Image (cartoon, rainbow, N blue to C red; front, side):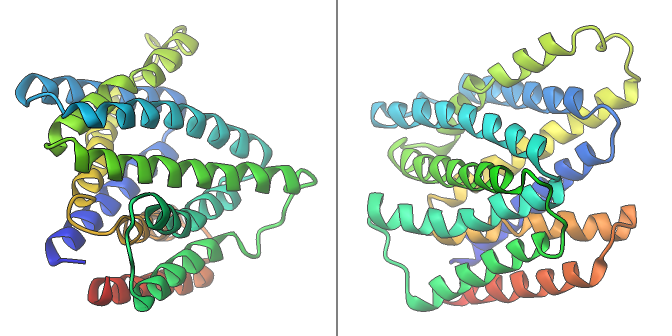
Length: 279
């Protein structure tokens, strides 16, 4: 992976960890998520007003990514209903880099050296380690299935976007229309929470807007990086945001156990180093 691509993806990981930490730290998570989605739509609208349309070959991928994201949000909410965040998020995000690398191999013809596969496996194991030692509920089997399907959806839209943006003949146009078409998330949330919108404090709106800017920046940088580096490597480094989020929870929110999270962070760091050298 080139230095430019690595910087882009690591910056995206920090941004992603930031907006997730904002959601976790607020009492109005659903409204903040709706505001984040609305900001993404606004960013998308701004982009499509400034840049040319993506090439026609990329439009089926924009449509497919929009549909996959809808399924992703559905299974993500299901997994959170059946299990805890500390269980579901690491499992879903941990399996995604491996699936992305396999998908890129079969659908995009990307060949990774053995060392890159080792790096991806190290990152995935480090992320999944966060789910160890957590007590599973009686619905653990269903929750795990939902988390694995969520990871499959993450891998699916990652591969689709990776191929689509390369066919778009312009990353900004692809990103803009993708953000715009995902406005259904904001519409759904604002309709569902319409009674609360006038009652929430202004600080919630500021948090949502900041989170939206971080979210748009995070995914935009990742999509752009996919034009510069292998999809599997980008996915693995990007998912280091899970570790950053976990460490933010330890440092800022006093979450425990901290030792396991530090070990997981060190493993992911080792995997990222391997990918930066060999991928």
